Length: 151
Image (cartoon, rainbow, N blue to C red; front, top):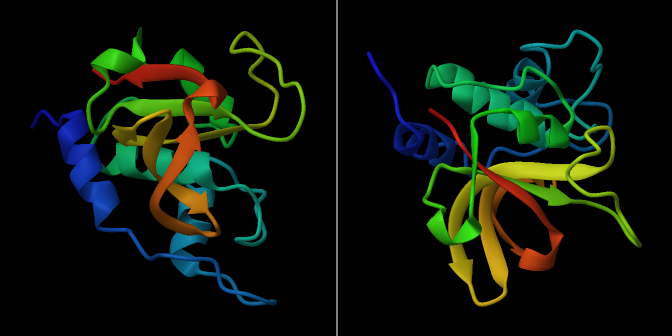
């Protein structure tokens, strides 16, 4: 069966509301996402946006980065212009304060999720680890590193 980015987006929407558990407890769903390709995460209080994106793409049988670094997604699929983005395309953003390196640096802070729409100078992303939960959030387009279409 061939799955599409639209299938991935539909799957991702079903996870809205999944969140980290405070304190010494961990959400087993998030731990499963983290450990799909990596054995080291001991808890859910680590960056898990890429783990969520990998998990959804694994379920949809789409290409994935198999890496917990958000910027690892800059090497997956085909790069497209933001104006061509559709729900289910992958959005990679800079993360952090101050000057951040460009898309040529994969080992730097970032954030990744699924394109959900555009609102003026903001990109809406459906992703994990957005305020410790899966939800749609808005980010300034000036933080954009790349848009990737999975094929």
